[in-house]
Image 1 (tube, rainbow, N blue to C red):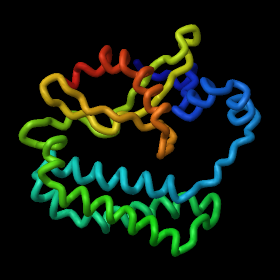
Image 2: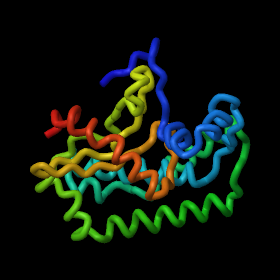
Image 3: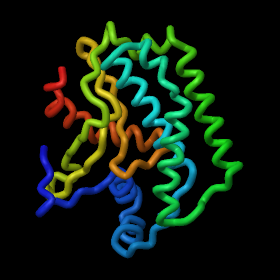
Length: 204
């Protein structure tokens, strides 16, 4: 499925989930513009830790696990976190104190250190010998409302890893929102599963 930006209306995960839960809230937020778009450190942290782990896995599958282990992942994470913070700061001004920044950075370092130390468990899920990386941030487009074919729902699959007929899938909304509740994740999986089967068997 493709998007014709001249005629199609592209909606994000946030838009669709808001509309499904309360159409009037969707109207107030996306039609009338009554939305709180102020950024927070959870957005910044989520994007930075996400990119750090993807960078590690990309290196592991494309080159070697040893080279991935040699990456200064904490520095990569720190630079991405600063980059994301500056991007939001240009539009909204400062929204976190240095102490808060350090706290989020320390939490991220703890996650990355744990991930790199637990090699045996990690290899059960990410092994260049047993698996093949088919894509990172693969766009996924579907039509959530069959009566409105010009409305397209666009998201991204974090990872597509091939292991016989097993796909490791995790959805990211187009607008980068992190910290989704489990109920939202279930909604996303339900919406996308048929589209995955029909359009992404080419990755196998």
